[in-house]
Image (tube, rainbow, N blue to C red; front, side, top):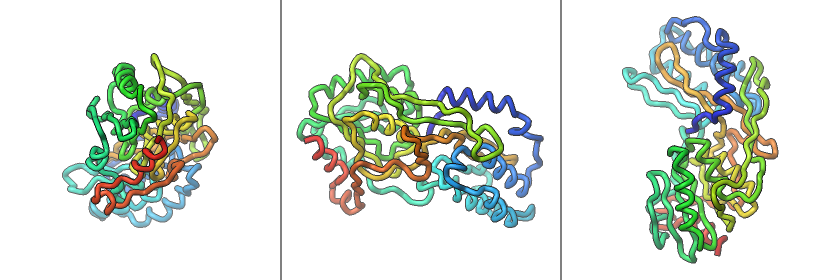
Length: 341
C-alpha cells in the first residue's frame, strides 16, 4: 500500500475543492443500482491510469450495468462489482463490504488472482552468517563472501527516524564487497521513506519517475507532471555494487523505490517482474458503507513508460519454485550473491 506523496496530496485536495460538486454530488439513496452507479462513476472520473492501460470504461459499464437490479442480494451485487473491477487488473484496487454481509474483502490485480509462493524468509535466514533486526520491517545481516543483506519488508516507519537508521545500517555494511536489498513481498508504504533510502545509494541527481493526477472528465485529462529525483542524501552513501531482489508481490512504493535505485549505475535487479501498481491511491465509500480504493495517478519511469499492470522487468529473471524453497534453496538469492562475488 502507498500513502499519497505530499505534492500529489495537495494537488488532489485542490482539485477536490475546485470541483467538489462534481466529485461529491448529491446524497444518494442506497440500493444495488445506486451503489453500482456510484462505484462505476468514481472510477470513471478519478482513475489515473485509465488512458495508459487502454481501458474502455464506458464499454465496461455497458457490459455490467444490465446485470444489476434492485432485487439482487448483497452477494450478487458483490459478484458483479468485483468482476467489473477485475478489468482494471490493479493491485491497489479493493472492495471491502461491511462486516454484516459476511462477504470477503476483494483485492484486485495479481494479488487477488494468484498466491505468490516464490519467497520464504526462513529459507533466506539459513543463508545468513550473521543478522540484526533494526525495526519490525527492516532486518539486515551478512552472507558468505562478505556480502551485505537488507530485508526491507515495507516503508511504513516514521520518516524522521530513517537518517539515524540508515547511518547505522550503512556503517555496518561499510566493509562488505556488495549489498543485496530484498524487496520480495514488500507492499510499499511511505514514499518519503522509500525515496530517502534510495538516496543513500546515489552519487548524482537523476530523474527517477513522474506522476500526474486525473484533472478532467476525459481519461487523458492529466495535470502537470510532478518530477521525482534520486539524489545523494545523508552524511554518506553506499556506492558499491547493489542487487535488488523483487517478485510479483513487490509493488507500490517498493516499485518507486526500485525506479529510484535503478538510476544508480551500480544497481541491478534480480528475481521476478514487480507487481505493476505504482500509482497513489485513495479510499472512498459507497452509499451502503462498503469501502473501495481508486488509483488516481499516471506514474511513469524516467523514460516515460507507464508500468501499471506490467511491472518492472528484472535485469536477471530468476523465478523460485515451491519445491526448491522446500528443499532450502533460494535460486534468486543465489544469483544475487554470485553477481557480487
